[in-house]
Image 1: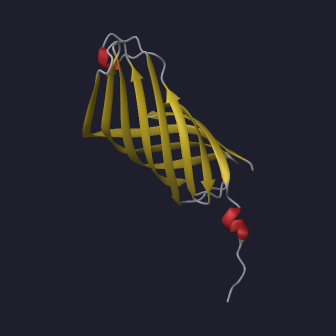
Image 2: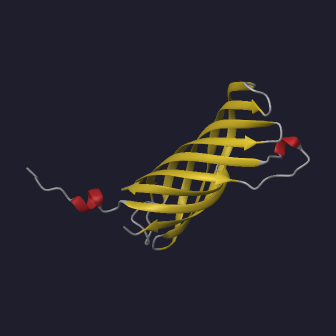
Image 3: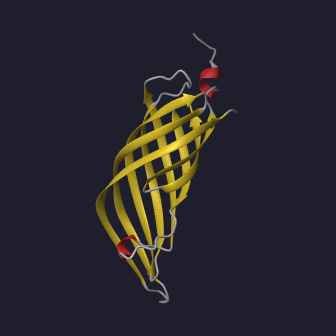
Length: 170
């Protein structure tokens, strides 16, 4: 009977990663990820600058994006990292758009396939693409107390992301 456990394999790859990127629906974002072996759990916050477009569908006063993600790294190897470069990613995103007459909250979920390109030890670029589902809207009209409307429905959306990352040495 084998009674010893290799603790290096169990605990040796725990790391924190910080990232900065752009994506849809995450917007221009910064994030933090916790890594355990080939798994990562992450949170990010994003925004886009205010838009002054004349087309009301694409104009806003402020935009905030909050995302939570789960990554599973599953294939390949890199000379700069023990974590595999190919990954699957599933996430949940809440987007808040404030426009001149109302506030719109959107809830999205997505599934992506991506790859880390490790450029140096601990530093690299991550690119992923996939599909998502936009399934909930909550509108609040400004200046109107209790003027709210809700929308439940499923709309397919494309999703993508590009980010720079740095794995912090622990």
